[in-house]
Amino acid sequence: QVQLVESGGGLVQAGGSLRLSCAASGRTFSTYAMGWFRQAPGKEREFVAGVSWSGGSTYYADAVKGRFTISRDNAKNTVYLQMNSLKPEDTAVYYCASRLWGAAATTPADEYDYWGQGTQVTVAS
Image 1 (cartoon, rainbow, N blue to C red):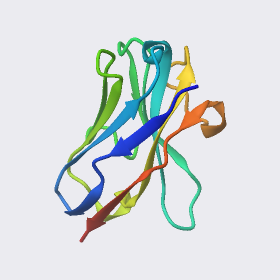
Image 2: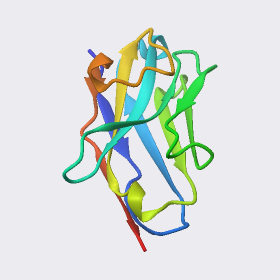
Image 3: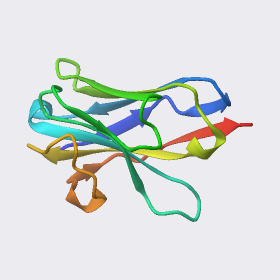
Image 4: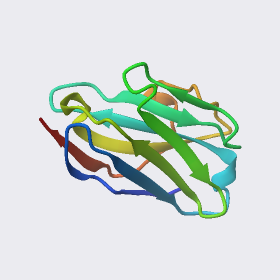
């Protein structure tokens, strides 16, 4: 069992930055690939970024490539999403998720085992 808790969301002006964190419980964090997803009102949950269990591989959705950076600190059981140059269309609830021994490029939401409760990101124009 893995419990995930996101933090760091908030309201920011377009062009600004936010850093999301996802803290995981359990001693096996380093065996899980981690992903960030987002869901805007009326839209399906979509993949944003993923990092392999080792942290050696990352993968991004085209919409955020070059603006967002995913990273992990296995010593702290935490995965991060640094979001720069934010746009109003980035407004959504952001979720972190974990998949045992997964790859960074695991994009379907139903392939992840555990989910956090989400954190709201609002980008004002």
